[in-house]
Image: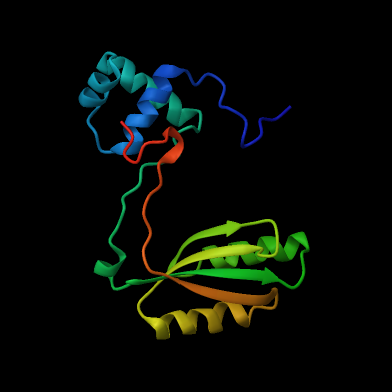
Length: 165
């Protein structure tokens, strides 16, 4: 039986969790410092990290970018309701939206809203053009509703502390 996405990862023990917790707070930490923080040898930390990557527990390391510094200071969440829920249209819409410039994340949901699109735009005109050119005119879209994001902050993550580690 295949593993489901929300099933606990087999073979993730307390040492792996400790490594993940420290990395969640600072993905750029050196292997030496990571090993010290977790209380294991550097060679063990490196082997564990390779194993976590190989098993898909660690899917990547990311950089948080100041979008305003790149000319995209306006962020929005756009709620999309589809007109038709055929698999082909859902798949085509998802892939089309994921490929558009400015799209930071695409969330496929249950409920009244089918998708939330997190977008970074240059200004309100850029946002308007994005919605008109790519969403409201898309044949699969029945409704689009845009909400501007004033600010966003990271939550506590799975460990329950604002700054893990």
